[in-house]
Image (cartoon, rainbow, N blue to C red; front, side, top):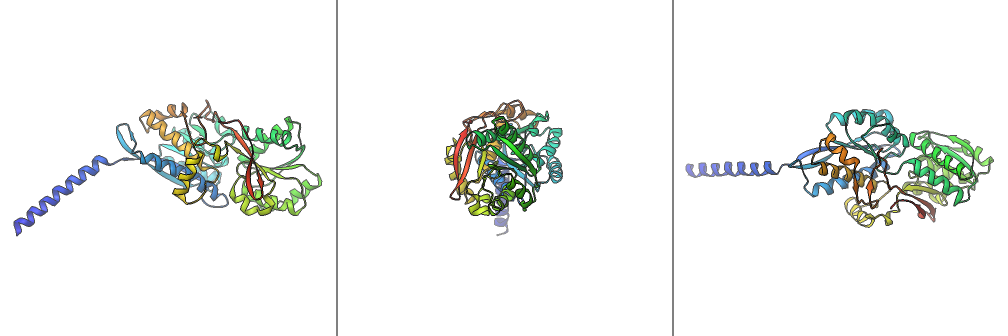
Length: 382
C-alpha cells in the first residue's frame, strides 16, 4: 500500500512538472499599453466611450495570439483617470512612463494631452491621442499622432458651412477657454470671416460653468443669426436651454463634443435645431461601421457613442506597427507607426502626415431634428 502511494505521488509530481512546462511554453509576455482620459466628473462619458474602443482593440488583437520578436505577447491596458485636468494629466503621464508602458493611447482633452506629450516624447514613447488642438502635433515631437482630424480642419469646414450653406451672417462666438474649445472657436471664427460672415461678439466662459445668462443676455441684444460654442456637451446643453428660455431664436452650433446622446438627453426639446461638426464619415457610412456597431453592442451592451471607433483604429495602428517592426520596443516600432497605411473602421486608409496628423480626415455636419442627430453633409474624407 505504501509502495502504491509513493508511485501515485511520483506520477502526480511528473504530471505537475509536465503541465508547468507546457504552461511555461505557452506563457505570453505582457506588453503594457497606457491609456488616460476623464473617467470621473462631467466628462466621464467621453472617457468611457474612448476606453471602450481601446478595450475592444486590445481584446481583438489578443484574440489573434500575436507573436512579436519570436515570442507570444499579450497586450495589457494600464488605464488612468486624468480628470480632464492638465496638472493631473502630467502626473498620470509620469506614472505610466514609470510603469514601463510601450505605447500611449490618450489623452482625450487637448488641455491634458499637450502638457503630457512632452513627458512621453522625452521617454521616446509613441503617443496616439484623441486631442484635436493643432498645437499638439506642432511641437516638433516625433512621438505625437492623432486619432481624429484636428480643429484646423473641423473649425474651418464648420465656419465656411455656417456662412455659405446655412446663411448665417451675424455670429456670436463663445468658448470655454480650454485648449480645445478656444482653438476650435478660433478656427471657426477665422473661416466664417473668410466666407463673408461677421463675428459680432466673442465671449468666453469656463469648462465648469452651467449658468450663461449674462453672456446670452448680451448676445440676445445683438440679434445674432447663430451662436457658436467651443466646448463640451455638459455646458452646451444648459446653454441651449437658456438660449430658448431667453427667447434667442438663433440656433446653437458646436464641435464633436456637442454631438453626443448626452447633449440630447440634457437639452431635451431645446436641442432641436442645434448643429454640430464631427470628424470623419457618419457611422453608417464608415468602411467598417456596420461590423463595428454589431461587435460593440455585443461586447458592451450599448450603442456606439462618438469616439470609440477612432480609438479602436488608433490602437490597432499601434499594434500593427509593433507587428510590422517585429518589436514592442518604442524606438524600433515608431518609424513603422509613422509610415502607417491601413484600412480601418473609420476610413478606407488610415495614414499620418509628417507631423502625425491624419491624412484622410473628412468632416460631417449634423443637425438635431425631432430629438435626433441627422446628417446634413459630409466634406472630404474617404
